[in-house]
Amino acid sequence: MDCCIVSALWCFTPLYFLIHLLCFIFADADFTLLWGSLLGHKPENKLKGLVAWVTGASSGIGEELACQLAKCGSRLILSARREAELKRVKQRCLECSDLQDKDILVLPLDLLERTSHEEKTKAVIQYFGRIDILINNGGRSQRSLCVETSVDVYQALMELNFLGTVSITKQVLPYMTQQGTGSIVTVSSVVGLAGAPLATGYSASKHALQGFFNSLRTELTDFPNILISTVCPGPVQSQIVQNAFTEEVNKPVAIAGNQEYKMPTSRCVHLMLVGIANGVKEMWIAQQPFLLFYYVWQYAPTFAWFITNKLGRKRVQNFKAGLDADSAYFTKPKTS
Ligand SMILES: NC(=O)c1ccc[n+]([C@@H]2O[C@H](COP(=O)([O-])OP(=O)(O)OC[C@H]3O[C@@H](n4cnc5c(N)ncnc54)[C@H](OP(=O)(O)O)[C@@H]3O)[C@@H](O)[C@H]2O)c1
Image (tube, rainbow, N blue to C red; front, side):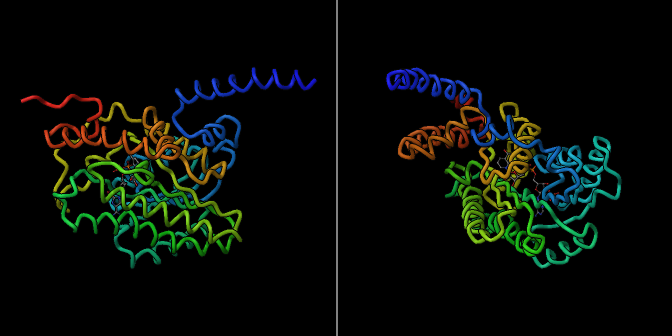
């Protein structure tokens, strides 16, 4: 009998690892999230009727979040600075869902104007009476070398990505603790976990968010029905590069870059909603080979430094040569 168990273990253990290895090659998210998408709650069942506030809803990931949440039947608050774009997104949401005009509130908001956040939150409560999900998505990236970047850019990145997000969260959290339920979901990034060249300030702001929300979660153990979740996407199709900070606060990005190799926005957002529906606390969402990079950073940091230095050098060289930095890993540097 014992012999049979040992033989079975010898057979099934390698098979188990082989299956996981094969799955990993085709994976575009961490295994917890992928298991959730296979066997867990469906977003359309869990999120229907909930009130979801999305910041950065005027383009990219935020716009797609609004549309997919609308299809799930969530009522929405759409926030960003550009009101006309928010109205366009609202129209798109109404066209692709059963929601009615009154179910979507367009609420222009500047994350930098922290003194307005209390009043904006009260406006949401007055309109819907509650907030079930806050998705802290608004933010900007960076494309510049540290030595060439003004400290004002670092300040702007921290003010927007970190303090703006903290400020809205602090306004919404008391309503959630009063309700006893809710989800605060923050779009961080792979560079919130690892480092990357040309993004020293952006990466710092996302690391700050990771630290803030990981710590906040530990303060909320008396509220088991409040989810604090951070989402760490790799490259995703959006306007992020066009809108990135450069060496100076008001200097635009020279090359918008190739979006083709990036993950489709719809897939990233679908996985995010699966994560919210299943209470996933940290989501890693990226296509290969980026996903492999997360695992190497987590489980073999010394090796991760080695790879990051190799790839980083190439990325910096390409950036200095005036090539598209985002597709630097796929492009040969110009030879003069
Ligand atoms: N795309 C990626 O590869 C990727 C990867 C990892 C993480 N992320 C994160 O995903 C989030 C969404 O970015 P995205 O990729 O969808 O880029 P995006 O298309 O540029 O969207 C950024 C959003 O943030 C809003 N925003 C910018 N400044 C704001 C301010 N001062 N106040 C309020 N809203 C502001 C923008 O709206 P307005 O201009 O109308 O204000 C826009 O709706 C960001 O937090 C980003 O760091 C993106």
